Length: 103
Image (cartoon, rainbow, N blue to C red; front, side, top):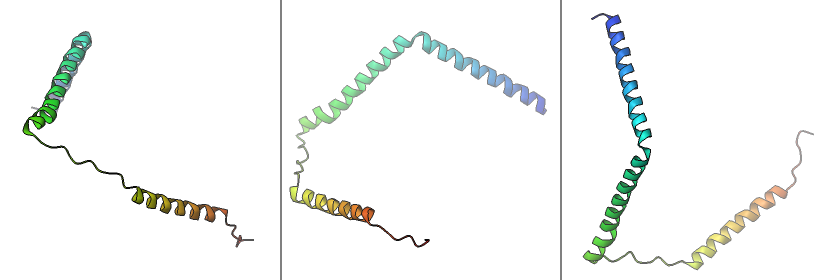
């Protein structure tokens, strides 16, 4: 086979794949409503399976939930104090007037 035959074959293959892809997209476009209904049903089924796996089976096995994390007010107050301190330091540096060394 020479290069011209290979090139013609590649061009024909591209035309065939583009035509088939266009045909597939037109088919999906014509049946868009059925496609949406089918994907919705599949989505509901997958959601039900996940719910069943994580909720129903966990309740049957008697798995206890993770303990509740309590809010620590003293830690929160210390973080707010540090942030306020940094904000004040930044505000003071903005208000400072510096001499221009190039005058």
